[in-house]
Length: 103
Ligand SMILES: [Zn+2]
Image 1 (cartoon, helix red, strand yellow):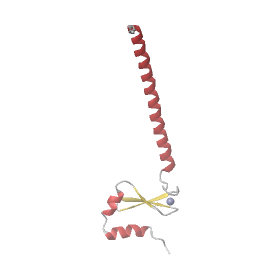
Image 2 (spheres, helix red, strand yellow; image 1 turned 180 degrees about the horizontal axis):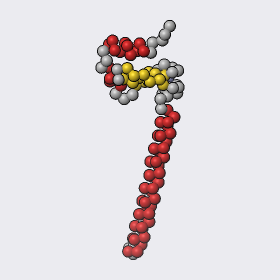
Image 3 (cartoon, helix red, strand yellow; image 1 turned 90 degrees about the vertical axis):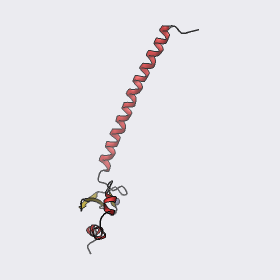
Image 4 (cartoon, protein in one colour; image 1 turned 30 degrees about the vertical axis):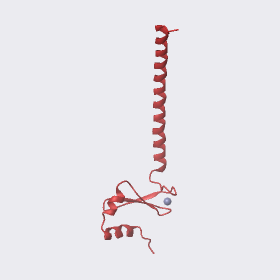
């Protein structure tokens, strides 16, 4: 039995309502992801990715290098590894000399 135009209209309205609510829920999910990202950033900013202790940032020849205050791991931001490879050998030695342990 073919559907009456009023039935088709009702189906259409319900589908539209569903789509509208689905979009609202999807937006909520996106916001949640954003807040979670923000929370994680606050939690991890300037913390060592390995041991979680504070990083100490030094700047040498416009390259910022983060060194862990605990495990002594050295971390670089995007592009800094490339910048370091452009340093001359003596520049590279001097950079690491900054971190050398004082005896
Ligand atoms: Zn560490």
